[in-house]
Amino acid sequence: MSVVVVGGGPVGMTAALLLARHGVPTTVLEAAPSREMVGSRSICVQRDVLDILARAGVGAQVAEVGVTWTHGLTFYRSHVVGEIRFPEVGSAAFPPFVNTPQTIVELLLEQRIAEEPLVDLRYGQRVTGLSQDGSSVTVTTVDGPVTGSHCVAADGGHSTVRELLGLPFDGMSFADRFLIADIRADLGFTAERRFYFDPPWNPGRQVLVHPQPGGVWRIDWQVPADFEPTNDNIEARIRQIVADYEIVWVSVYRFHQRRVPRMQVGRVLLAGDAAHVMSPFGARGLNSGIADADNLAWKIALDRQDLAGPALLPSYDAERGAAAEENLRVTGNTMRFLVPRTDEDRTHRTDVLNRAVTDESARAEIDAGKLAEPFPYTDSPLTTSGGALCPDAQLMRGGRLRELPTFRVLTNWCDWHPADAWERLVVPDVIPLDQEDDTVLADALGLKPRQAVVVRPDGHVAAVLTEPPGGLAAPVTAALRRVTGW
Image 1 (spheres, rainbow, N blue to C red):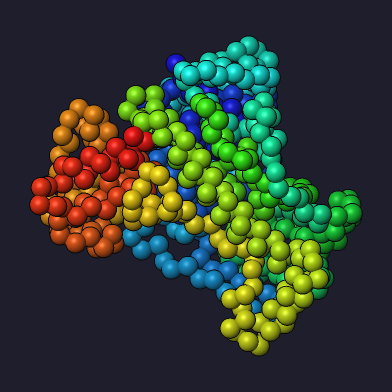
Image 2 (image 1 turned 45 degrees about the horizontal axis):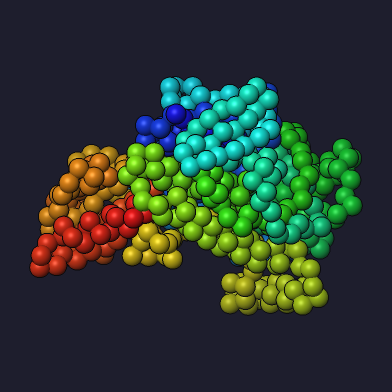
C-alpha cells in the first residue's frame, strides 16, 4: 500500500521523493492536466533546504542552475540604509541562498520522479472526497478511489483536502496588492538583492529586486488595492527602472497570513500552503513547505514499519505547527512595517526610516524581511536537547552527515552499539567522531569526551548525552524511544 500525496507541486514531489528514499511507495495526485512552466513564483532557496532537496536527489542541480547571491542593499529614497553580506560557502555543501525559479525546481523534481519507480505521479486527478480509518486513507478523484496508508495534503492555498477535513484557514489578507514582474534586462549591478523603501518610482510604497538565472530579474512592486494591471500601467512602472527590457512574466498577488489549527488529522498530514500561507518577504513560504515534507517523511516511514510509537505522528503538528506560528509571527511583523495599517505603525515606520539615513543604530529597526532559517524544535515532545539542526560535515567514512536519511548516533570517545533488533532497525549508523578528520563535527557540536548525540533523519538533534558510569546503553535507548514517539 502506498502513501497518497495530494498535490504535485514542489512540496508534494519532495515529500514523495523523501518517502521513496525510505523505501515507501507513493501515488501523487495532481489536479492540473499538465505542468505549467510559467513565471518564477517562489525563487529564493535557503542553504538548509538545499540539503533537504539533496536528499530528494535534486539539491545540487537546483543550486547549479540558480543564481547565488551573498549581498543585499536596502534603500530609503536615495539613501542606503541597510546592507546584508553573507560569508563565503566555506565547508558547507551549499551557499546561504540560491535564487532558482519554482518552475525550474518543479521541473528538476519531476525529472527525478521519472527515474524513481516508487513514485507514481498522475495528472488530471482532481480530488472529490476523502475518508479514513485506523489503518488507511482513501482519496476519491474524478477517476475513482485511491487508498494509501497515509495521506500528505500538499495541494496549495486552496486545498481541497483541507476543505474536506472541515479545517478552518483563519488569518488575514492585506488590502494592498503586489505587482510581480520577471524582466530580462541589464540593471547595471551584479547579482544582489535590493529593497527600496519609498523610491521616486513607487512613492509611499516599496519595491524588491531579486536576480534570477539567464539575466532575468524579479521585481515586486507594492501597489494600491485598486491598481489595474494593464500593459500601459505595467510598462510605465518598468520604464522608470530600466529603459531596455523584455517582459518574461507578470502577475498581481494579494498576500495572506493564514494557517490551519492543526496540521495532522488522523493519518492525514497537511504541508506547505495547504497548512499555512504567509507573505513572501523573507522567503519563508516554499522553504518552510519543504521543511514540512522533510519532517513528515521519516515519521510516516517509521509508522508504516511499526517502529513508531503513538506520539510520533502527532509530533508533526507539534513541531511544524510551531514553525508555522513562528514564520507567521516574523512575516506579520515585516508586513506591519511594509504595509502599516494603523497610525501608530505608520508613524513608527516613517520615524525609523528617517532616522536610519544618518543614524546607523536605527537601521536594525528596519524590517524588510527576516530571511528564512531552520526552525529549532525547542519545545518538541521528541527532544531533550533543544532540537536544533545538527551542523553538517564531511565524514571520514565518506559522504556528508546530512546526506544520511536515517537516525544516527554520533559518539565522541565513548562506545555504543544497538542493543536489540528494534534499535538495529532504527539506527543503522553509529558514527565515531574521535578520528582525526571527524573532530571538526565534534567541535561544531561542542562535544566533550564521553558524550554522544542522537541525530534524527531530518538532521535535527534529538539528544546530547554524557556517558554515565553504567554506560550509554540506557540513556541512548531512552532517547531513541522518546524520539520515535514512545
